[in-house]
Length: 272
Ligand SMILES: C[S@@+](CC[C@H](N)C(=O)[O-])C[C@H]1O[C@@H](n2cnc3c(N)ncnc32)[C@H](O)[C@@H]1O
Image 1 (spheres, rainbow, N blue to C red):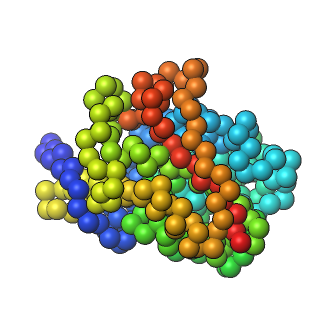
Image 2 (cartoon, helix red, strand yellow):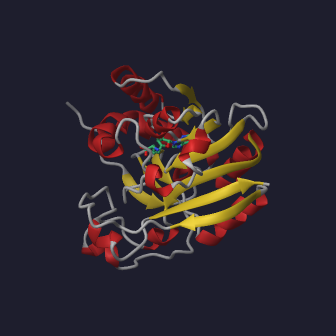
Image 3 (cartoon, helix red, strand yellow):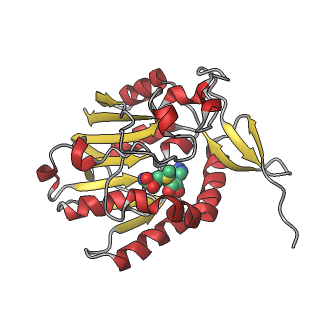
């Protein structure tokens, strides 16, 4: 059997369409491995904000759990909808949106395995939300979409549009400072090797130069400005510390690096 050559990792411009296409295919191809590798850590119906293991049940970033009842919630980049299932168990009415059909098929698989009704699933791009204005009370995202989109300001505007005034928007992303370091869990990942200020996307491309995976960087200041420009108010920025119980590596996130550097940034915003 002829094996496709390994993609080349590079830094170059990648626009909205190219990034969306590349990442949709990447997540479709890799969803099975992702769920196999991380499904147990994520749990079928838990709300985990990132590789540190911060659990919404403890963090309460969406507000008191008792207040979630009956809220219309949009989860963006939901993957297998684990967080939405946690929200549904608290009486919320979540919609789990993701770009990848295969990730959503995993959501359906889990729905058939665990008690509780099926979560409402929508396949769409976070940059063009297929919902009416002011149709949600709350929006959330645990590492969904934002690290992968070329125009994250557009996602902020779209989220603001579909939220009712006063609604919360809470999202986690790779902590921006990690961009300056190699994505290695070991000691090689502790020495800054590129500029934090260089926003040129990380692109993996095939031998024809077609992107097969793209990640986009925003500095902390970029994120704050995009939030404010969309008509959202930033009320907290949470940087979870690496807990002593967590010995698990997740790609470039590891106990070694986690004890020295922030790995996740969680932005808590309110629609003005
Ligand atoms: C790291 S996973 C996070 C999923 C889930 N929250 C979890 O913790 O497993 C990122 C998810 O974002 C989705 N995604 C990437 N780009 C997206 C986009 N432009 N719009 C919507 N979803 C996107 C991927 O398909 C993937 O399911």
